[in-house]
Image (cartoon, rainbow, N blue to C red):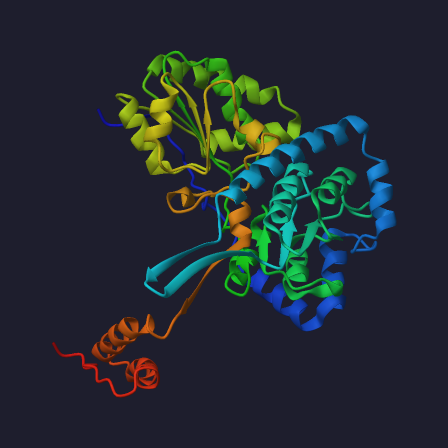
Length: 435
């Protein structure tokens, strides 16, 4: 049985996308040339904020005082989960060495980058969780300096809860600046900040494009598009929960795809009937986003069996993948392409987005085919080293000289030749490429 689309998307994540490239290139160039003053001009224009852009400790303390204690407790809870999971991830990377040949030793070291720039969205939604996810993982990785950057509200500043989260998670500096100018400030080392070695965190299309353009000059976590989510559900799934979970992710934005893949037509039809009412029950702005996303980008697919369901999911390579189906272990073993996996009705993408410890900065637009999400590993350079005794270098030098000459790289061959001549005077070696 071929996949049957009960609902087919009329648009894709790239449909109607603005051509922001030239705008971003122009602003980045202006700021690099003009430095702090130009960045402040763009901040005044786009952020509509003229306050202090690099927060002082007094300003941080004042913001923290505005955060309700209950919210502080929730932020600390989420931070503790993210920190402990990040520490577990870091434990999987070790400095190692082995004796390749007698006397010839090669090894690996994991070295954190010096400076991380963490972008925390703060426009339509104040992404408290993004501060927790990005700053905490950088801190656990061992970065020497962490800047948290978030757009200020006009004439108000950065949301106090974002400031509190960034502060307790380990940010060394908090920058009240949004968009391209915020990314530029961290990259170019403006306002006395160290130049960032890596930029991480979600953002709008201008932030994403700035990171894409700067990639290579600095590291980035990934090139992100609109968030997306897929649910795999069988006949025993609760249609109300499935529909609620789809709507919860559609509220991210008008172009955030959500997909339902099932082997049960009755469930699919039930879910489709429930979604509009659940959307209408959201606050106005959230409903507007979810309604557009459901109308233009959502898909509902009926498959013959669970194998076809799994294959469909792997083809889509969703950012978030939820399984509400029997035999959870089978799905865990079978599925291969996703940013983060949520197994069973008892967990949900919202948990991972906010508080469970796994990161919510994840690959979108099919990028889960080749990469995972943000983790301590993104901040760490896996480098190699080697050392050898003179005797151990003999066979390596001979092989290197022969291979180099076969490739036509005579200079490489001679770097091996001189060592053989120095360490083994009087000995002769066949160093030609011919057999």
